[in-house]
Image (tube, rainbow, N blue to C red; front, side):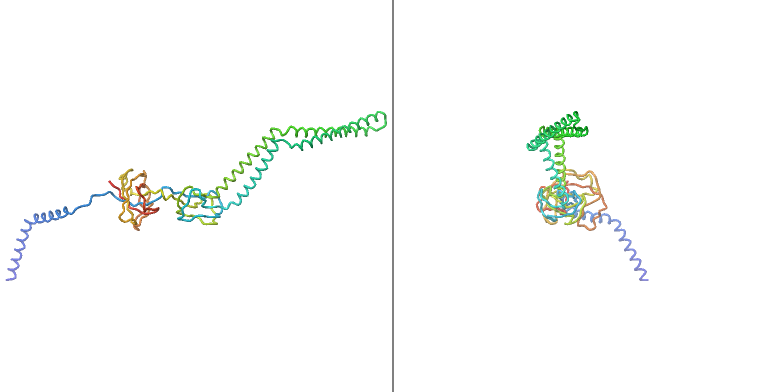
Length: 345
């Protein structure tokens, strides 16, 4: 009996409590919420900043040097990390065959010039004198043949010789005359000098030999690879005694004095960056230092992400927009450093 009475009293108390909460609960919770909001509003918030992206320090000037000939590497004078100066020989190819071609071309040019000099200046005086002497001897032989032919002709008229003997004498006269004419033409040639056509032909030979030598020397220059700028070797792609083809990469050179920041922003942020926009750059290796600069180029297209970061979970299967940034100061920054870029609003 007592237990049932106690149960009725407990039920009555619970009902009363429920009614009180129903009437006073909303104001109680509203007061708690107001107090929470008041606490949150009392905590100061930092000013809202722009979004950030990862970037890399890179040289504005990066040059890939390639082989211009097919052959064997005979010497490499630099390695990765070595500084180079403009015009410095970096790679030498085996050039034995082309050097032999140059020797032949030089000999041909000397011979062509000698022929041209001979044709242009005429024959030597001793050659002309020898030709005149030959004509005089030929003249004497001819005159003697004429006298013998006339004597045979007189004897034939008297019946003192045969017709055959006279014909032989007359044949010698004709041969002597032909030889005299030939010697005279040779003497005239020496006296008059070379014809214009012969001189022009000899001059053309000199031009041809000069062009051939110039070509082989230009080819020889391709067997040496020189640095086009003052810079730094950052990659070496070949080893000594290695055989390469035309276009094979040899070395990569940068100018470490001309740097920029190359950053990539995800395509969801495209349109939030503009050229001339201010930025701040921080580097893990330069704790507490902030670099200032501006965006100077925004590429108008997006492509697959190429930059790696230290985050092993970072995905490369996203599209990004490439931008270039110029800093006011690059002290402490070197090629390849990863930086954080914060874009200012």
